[in-house]
Length: 502
Image (tube, rainbow, N blue to C red; front, side):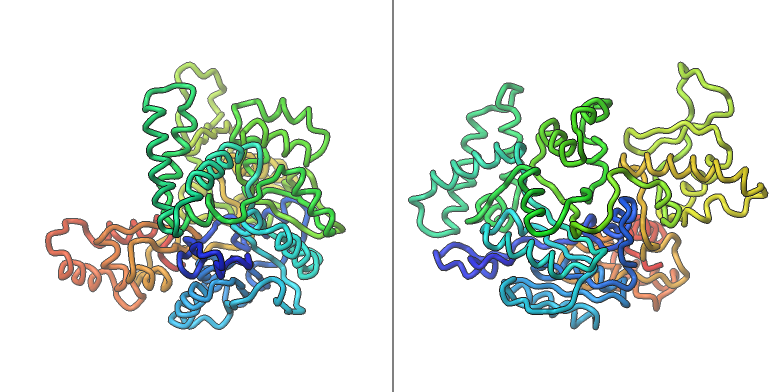
């Protein structure tokens, strides 16, 4: 964290005494930032050769996994917590990574003259003073490359109004409690008592009770530094946009692009509501109101950087695609020509396809999962004249873009590091193997967290690229003779979980 209150002069628990839980944030990965930027017309830097700065990097849990899989990119993290910086440096040393560095620095003394292609500030903006917010935006203006992208997360109204009321009630109610740990304990007790008073039956207070239950489930570090942090200043989205303009910056997209398409609203409401918004910012503010949104992960660029207000389907043609869409049988009451195929995700998204070349491309993606394919390869090679193939390419781009904004399709600017098949001598991520020594939570090669059960955690240390399947099976029988699960089954799990190198 970069707030100068980290030293906790008031006796509260600072980030050294009670670290904020650190983790990888998939939407902040430079691959994702590059892909979204290109969809909105920005010629963002290649994630394989880029410069990334993270403000409030904690122990590097977000930067280190990127540095591991992108050896030709450079990563710099700054944070005020000496304890967390030290922890991250130990991990970097054990992994032998030369392309990532963590520094204990504040924004005011970050004197680097270089520019960065991507700047990440997750969990910083709303949880610090207005002066530090200003310095963060100034840093983005001065240090962003001309086509650079900044990822900034923050709390927003109207959704955060209820959490604000609970926060202020807890702070006021525990004002006379001495000691930060005692205040945390008292806050938990108050929330539990209030939830008990509201009851478990469905009533007008059910939303409040559900929110209290979620807050009670947070660990101490999250509760202290998120809900009860000394500084916590949510704002309306339009206020954030105005702050950006004051620093020569502008909003161009949300990291979760699906939210911009109204994926979190009732079916059809987003399209109808969009007519009331005369601009991108107006539409986004209206969606915040309708969804009662409490948190944003906004993407920001320099004010003079050309951008689009709508997604550019042409940008998909250079993307690597991963899809969960599979052929599904038509329902009995569906009336459709026999040449139409339905593809659906594991969620609610479904699309009917009448172009056999598009259907074949979607089948290929389904067969490749958990891997994917480059868009350019999905239809290429078909024995069809280019002028005949062009409409199929356009249709496929539209289908995949529709799936992307429904979270059924992943679009990447580079091929992910996770394997799509099990090699003769499989190798799990060295970071995951290292993390498994300390606990069940590990970072996969999709930049997400996976919880390993005991057998998976025990065996992952031996999945290091030196053992074939027979050797791994023998080792597994030695470690867990009573476990009936085969090594092949366990390797298939590692593959699905994104833990094996490609």
